Structure formats: C-alpha cells, structure tokens
Image (cartoon, one colour):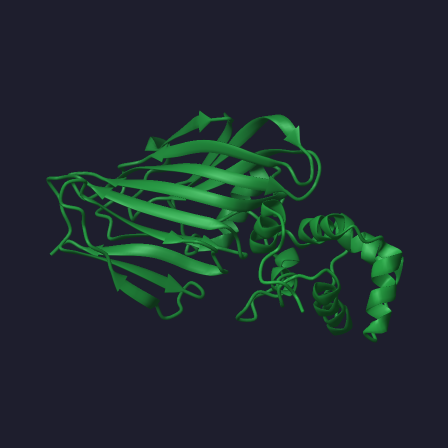
Length: 312
C-alpha cells in the first residue's frame, strides 16, 4: 500500500508542483530502484513497458499521454510507493484540463482576458518561446490600490524550478485596467534578476517584461526573484485576478487600499476558465489598521483566482 506522504521534502514538493519527469526521477532516486527492476515490478502487475521508455520519461524527452501509458503511470505509483494519482495528476490534472505539455509551465498571466494574439505577438517580438522552461513553485503577489481607486503598483516574489537546462530568463505579463497606458507603466527588477527588453500594446493595455537571471539554470534548479510593475494609468479598479495554466505550488495574493478609498466589500473568487461562472466566493474581512485583504492557495489548479471589491 502506498504511504500517505513521500519520504523527502524535495519529492513531496515535486509531487505537488511537478514537472512530471523531475518528480519521477526524484522518486526513482529515493527508492533506489534501477529501471530494469522497475520494469520487472510493472510486469508483475500486468504492465509491459520498455526500459527505454521509462528512461525517456524521467529525462523529460517524452511524456506518457496514451491511455496505456497513463495506466502504466498509475502502476508506477504503486511500485514507487507513492500516494495514489500523485504522478498521474501532473499529467492529467483533476477536472480534465489539458496535459501540462500543451501549456506554458510557469507563465501565469495577470488576466486570462488579455487578448491571446496580442500577448503572443509581444512574445514573438522578444523571441520568447511559449514554454519558458520554468514551473512555478511559489508566488507571493502584493497589489496596491491608490486614493483614486486605481491600481498603482503590484510586486511579485516568484519561486520557479527549471524543467530543462539553459533557462536564464522569465517573461512577466501585466495587463492594466481599462484605459491603461503602457507607455506610463514602469517595470522594476527587484531581486536576483535584471530588467531586459520591455514591450507594450496600447490597445490591449498589456506590458510584457523580460527578467534576466545571472546564471543559466539546469533542469531541477530553483530560482527566487522579485519584480514589480508601477501603473496608475488605468481607470477605477474593481478586481485583481491571476490565471494559472497548470497545477502549481503556493499562491498568495494581498491587496492593500489607500485610507482615502476603502471598499465596502471584498470577495475571493475562482473560475475554471475565463468567462466561466465564478465559484468559491468568500467574503474577506478588511483589516482596519492595515487596510488589506489576502488569499492563500496552497496548491493551485488550472484556472483563475482573484479578489473583487465593491466601492459603494
């Protein structure tokens, strides 16, 4: 029977956040099983798979996607003494979302409503691939709303893990509220990164910024970096939301208001996709002294999380 929790903190983290091949590799290393031994144990369970395929899976060269391959993954969980569906969910998240390989692993946009063609065109200008080679382990975001009810700034402390060798940058996306003027948006590289190229689109109110690391990451390496966007050019703000393409680590969102403009109600919400009905509504108490509300999600799933507020 699979134990309730993996034996190491590193393996436990990888099973929560992925990517799949690093979680599989960590489990194989921790259990001390050669691939030939794993193949034998799978065969005892009626699952036939080649050592070469297993090797490709743990290297990230291939991903199990066919039904028979996914059945083999479920059997692997038993062989490696892992919690049920812990590897499977990294390939097919609950709710039937698309497999991780078909989505950007780390890029979580400010707003899923941002025109996809506009964002992709801006990425093309930077020669940035859709798959940035990074997976989000943790993200702490702070948003500041000013006295005129506008989004003045947002700051991010981001923790990522590389799932391939050679990654040395991250592209952050900001979409302001209605009326946002990208030419007035300022980007700040705060910790462990340098500001590279910046591009914007006035019609969509979108700004993307290249954040450069000082060293190239190897597959499995983690990196912590901080950055921010200063805006204030848009109209009155009534919500802040973030979209997640894949399951990931912890996400923390804090929204702080100016004492001259306090909302009458703040509500946490979730959506499975842009345009879908909002669920998980929960009223959030506004701290009288700090004038802030927050949400914490320990393990994000594909979809949208956000906080909305009413002014009157």
